[in-house]
Image (tube, rainbow, N blue to C red; front, side, top):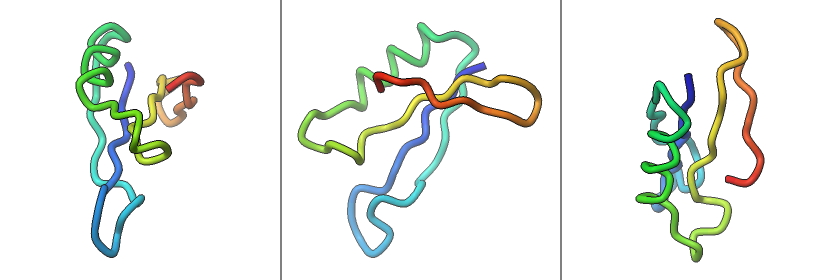
Length: 63
């Protein structure tokens, strides 16, 4: 299982978590990441995560 964490881009909560999107495969996640990524957003771009076990996630580098 993979997920993207999507962050708020404006307002008082800018930079805070907006929502998460879950994916069964890395390929599905990569496709959605490519749709959302904008170079000029820098640290506000989504972050990618892989599920390690039932309660733990590991952030993937390069996203």
